[in-house]
Image 1 (cartoon, rainbow, N blue to C red):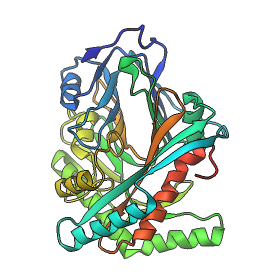
Image 2 (cartoon, helix red, strand yellow):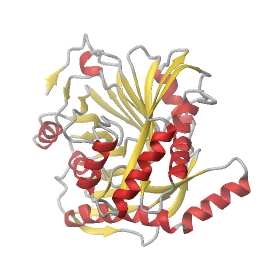
Image 3 (cartoon, one colour):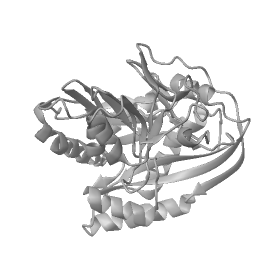
Length: 371
């Protein structure tokens, strides 16, 4: 652990906030940090630290942004939030351009047809400069306001060095929650854009529920989680079919998974490292999909990793790091991402449209009507 002085991060400052339907967790102050996930896991297991909060990267070779808060505070209510402040874009850059993303999907489908992978998740990013500057507390509230479950998070990824850079978002996807020996997950994979027209919206949900392509994509994730968790559990309940859930912009296939761990000394952070990244953001087989992502996209950093908290008891909650942005220290420039699962039946234009719909979560929270 690298110690952090109070002069860098004041003791009463929020360095981590996670709002969920069942409550809000805040990490205040920062007395230390980790970039090495193995060192953080060992510190929790040996009670060298009382808690760890923050984010782990998509690729384990990249540095994590993990903090030891001075205090970890729980409240029973989620953030209410408020509508966003209206902003305008003064500069924008897509990585890659729309035409290149479609070409990447075509290349990925060929890899699938050739048998290199069964599924791979391809993402694209958008760099924005906005006016007025982003206030972290206001944006966190806008994320919470923008979805019915009040999901929202903020991680001061620059806290250890006093850089005031942040990871913020509203991920709907629960990687895991651990309370004692009880562990729950709710993977999301397979999605469709929502519509402002109620009849069209209902039809989109029904079509998603019956889509063989999306159900197969979803099954890869469920099978992965079952295979990883079953050896650790006395009981594991995995429904045979997914349910359809919605965010403000997207319909998703989701499966609630619940289990009872054999050994309660396994921490929530241990489980996050075991499960992340899932096929929902990587692919199947995992190692082959990750190699293909590195080849096609390059490094993802913290995007599509996991974020959350773990306390001294080993309890905690971790989400998949999606529907998010990284905010630069000037609070005007930021990067956001969106991805989609590619299988043999994937259509390049439909995959591009899916990422465009997913980007709306961040753009809406920023108060940007169009991009």
